[in-house]
Length: 408
Ligand SMILES: Cc1cc2nc3c(=O)[nH]c(=O)nc-3n(C[C@H](O)[C@H](O)[C@H](O)COP(=O)(O)OP(=O)(O)OC[C@H]3O[C@@H](n4cnc5c(N)ncnc54)[C@H](O)[C@@H]3O)c2cc1C
Image 1 (spheres, rainbow, N blue to C red):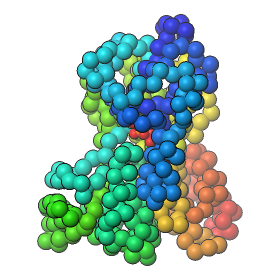
Image 2 (image 1 turned 180 degrees about the horizontal axis):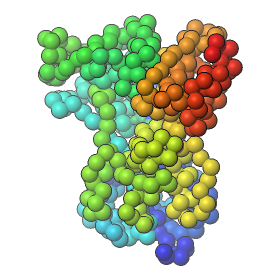
Image 3 (image 1 turned 180 degrees about the vertical axis):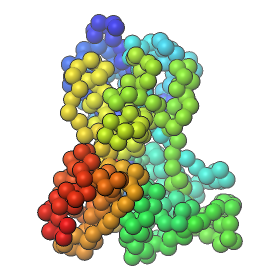
Image 4 (image 1 turned 90 degrees about the vertical axis):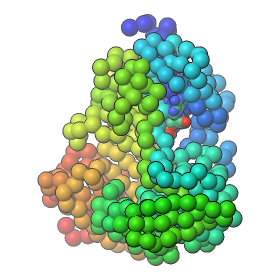
């Protein structure tokens, strides 16, 4: 391995995971060169506000910048914005099919892109939401629209639906599954999310199969397989994502859903290639299978672990194997730790205090694998260590009862 001062770490993806990796490397004392490449022209910015405060106008584009130019200069990182990594081999990353940038270590932090529907029309009235530019375009459209159709009842769609309702739009949410949010949260908690939106006047259509999708001058029309026609001025398609890894074919990593890594971010079979954040699928000792996580805290926690690994420093203490996520919808803060998708049973209890405080616990073979709360952050924080140790059901229920004063 090259001595440290002659090392050149090239990080592709100048967003949360890439920026945090650069910062963690410097914090750990790395004195070699760092280049951070990003295809967007904006300084690295934060995505969670894009479906929340940027849409309401409470935060501007400038407010969501993660670090200003002065901070980036101080970090001593060569920042190449508006440049796309188009290919890579074992020595160089090629930018825009032209410039080859040699690396000693490569960090893949290219995240994901919003997926559209196969028959989605290209129109100013039809949106996806992944970037700051997407958010500004959607915000401007919502400010003059009377109605919104959200295709796909995931978190981003739900947050946009909540903003639009608060701005007085008629909102319909269309979901292919029998219950909205069921995939992420299970049917019981999914039903409470549905209720939250219906209580705020959102119309929810489930079991929906889209048979045609056409735009017009004033909006778009979605026709469902059962003949229902849904029209709106503005449509948001929120049906999931695809990983940005197609440019990695030169190192054999273009296929699959996520770049496969060991438990500390080193890409399997590669000594000097690492992956972090939404694009990375890390082995997970807690839950025993590789997993890719599209959550903010995961990107931050993985960057911390990866930087130590890249520098062959002792592994730091970290919670990164137990995913944490939050979502803000209306006045509800939903928080989640762990892996509800692994559960075989789940239950939900109302918490004392103001209405709408809930705790859901998810068990697999009588072990706690996930917990979700509505408006109860302190309870959730105390449950994360219990999920990390997959505490047995009896002990988990006893702790939860102690925490919230409910019967075990
Ligand atoms: C609207 C929205 C709301 C969200 N809300 C929440 C929330 O409430 N809570 C939560 O926990 N998480 C939330 N998230 C998820 C969170 O923002 C992501 O987990 C986080 O941004 C992941 O960071 P990342 O750096 O891995 O990927 P990204 O932020 O996707 O960054 C990847 C970067 O790589 C760039 N790139 C891609 N390909 C190339 C290439 N070939 N060459 C150069 N650059 C490239 C992209 O342009 C992008 O800037 C939200 C995400 C979105 C989109």
